Image (cartoon, rainbow, N blue to C red; front, side, top):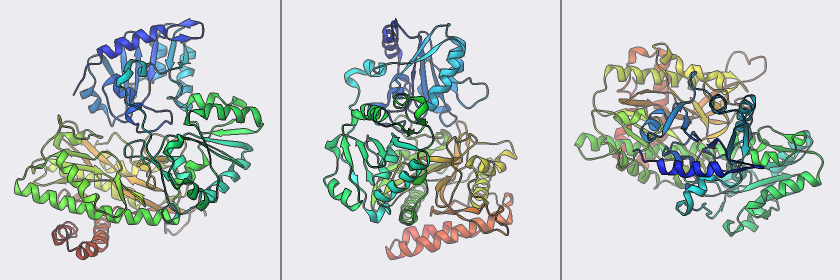
Length: 613
């Protein structure tokens, strides 16, 4: 589980001593973010620098290396994983706890005055850069950009190359709206802001806007590129060798012309616009410090991009695709859980890895299947308490009738992206496990049925999913809901539901799709999570929030929730009715498909699982 980082840190510290900062030489600390140059949540292997230097491979975390200490900040999803993966060189900083200082505060307190703290400016967003810079300045220290990535120098020839896979076009039957129509909306917003150009670095925003998809990052249908949108030009900075063979036809079908430039030319192109135009330039605060610094402060509009918000509100074709892909995905899930329960009852050897492979094999038979949307979290017993666990040979456990099994999985289809979690016990759960499961389910039912004012921030709703757990002093260390892309990233902003404020949340709006996923984790014993994808739809209430508009959620995930784990006396009559109604919907939706396919085995399992309680 742990690999030695001693030599890597020694080499890095040698480079830190030689790093040039203006006329000075040497930095006292080096920050290694998780990000790539596009601030992506997940990275291709070439960009997994924080994982390389620390040994911790969770999707979120920041490493800080000083001349004497190495520290890793990560959130509650990854505390257990980090403890298992960090060697003795590292100190785990539990981000999110009140006692844990921020990176900037820790550095300001522990470095001598006059210290330089270095970072690759392409890998740190402006939003993250500024508070660290401010905290360091208060201690008479400086955050400085370091040209050339020091981790890359240490990694050397062993560093995997950056991926550059072929791009595919997404036809209008799946995208629903032409590039030209999307451009018209962006032009209008540029005009309202008195802006000449919009600089886009987020890969999912570029893929969505251009009706293109890629595979440069595992599970994420995106491709390395930058986009500049002006009133009269679309400039795409990308390796031209990866463009699809039907790219010319794609532009005709979408009524646009896209000017293709080299990927590495983005800095030059921004500088050209700065020097030739006089109005403002729009760039998201989540874009890199490097790109942002190319634009004079007085000319920046630093707000969430219009593309980010447009992408989150699905069009009619995307909505239909989401619903249909979740039905096909539900069939695959039922086939897997029916098969798995049968195998466990027979005493057959099934482990976390072989189970995940079997689930993938069921999904791969479905129409429009393109791959998984993330590594399947197939977790038995204590592994389920590691929130973002994924099985490896050294951690692989048998799935059995003595432990809780948590399965969080999803797929990419041409018409939608899925993400669903179910928690099952194939034997007899303990009373505490049943209580914890029921309280998680209560939160999920409460959240999924709530009515709320249009454009309320997602953070406002978070407590609804936690209250049943909070009533007895239980909680979970992750958010309650994240946006989901349309054949795009499984985690999508700018909205979300959690304890922390989402700074770019425009408020929840009709036809956004988010997850509903409360959980509970007993360290070293078990994990429970129940997750559906829900569509935001108009709500029916007596009053209309003073004409602000009422919204609610419609569950589109189609897979039963195990009722043997429920302590019915903890559910209200309304909650029982909600669960039974959902299970009837699952039966009405999936049973005709299973019957048509002649899958009597899965149909029999489904009938058992959806019986009213």
